[in-house]
Image 1: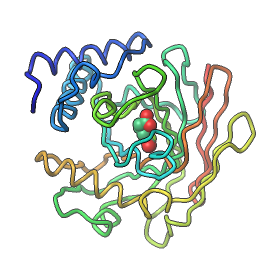
Image 2: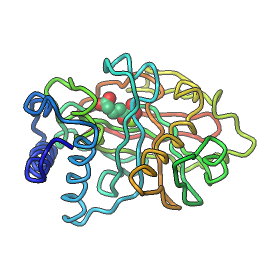
Image 3: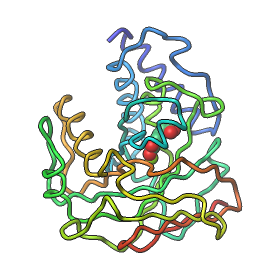
Length: 262
Ligand code: OOG
Ligand code: MG
């Protein structure tokens, strides 16, 4: 850690207020170029603490920047981890208020629902599959609080990895007997296909991203509780959206999910 507790709290407040008022800001590494990984996750924790203090509930976690398409798009080279709140969950087929967001984008994701706790270190793909109840089709709405959606890894970690909203479908796909590597996704915007891919785009197998997340939390003495929902990361590049857009995602074997931007 290079930042003191007061600076960590002030940075969390700055990012929190940007999200609350749909206002962007400069990268926090511009002001704190020497901040380290622990600082970045400490700001993320402080941000989470503010949201929980307002009554939000933690419902799961997310891995991001887990596909080469995403890493290339954002100019970074390693995955990042964040958390999901009930306040950010949207109803399948429901509305996402674009005015509450700065410059939203959507991503096709495979969402894992855990039947059992997952605890690192030493978590591997087999442990993830054994602990997973089922997967669902998921659309993540990301919205970086940074100007022009430009950031470095430490800045985006502090900003809870651009997490903003998410929606999942209601048709569970059991992992036993499914081949998640070749499970295809098609994302449509206003009826036109805009992104295609398959599970293998995420680190060769999306369960690998969940294992990495469990190991990341394990290093902090935390775990992924039973019942958690875990977004394993965008399979393709994220697609910009605006009020009026309708986005749907089909995941082979798991039906579809959709949202409307109002
Ligand atoms: C960071 C978050 C990335 C994903 O699925 O790759 C993410 C960003 O691109 O803003 O959620
Ligand atoms: Mg994502």
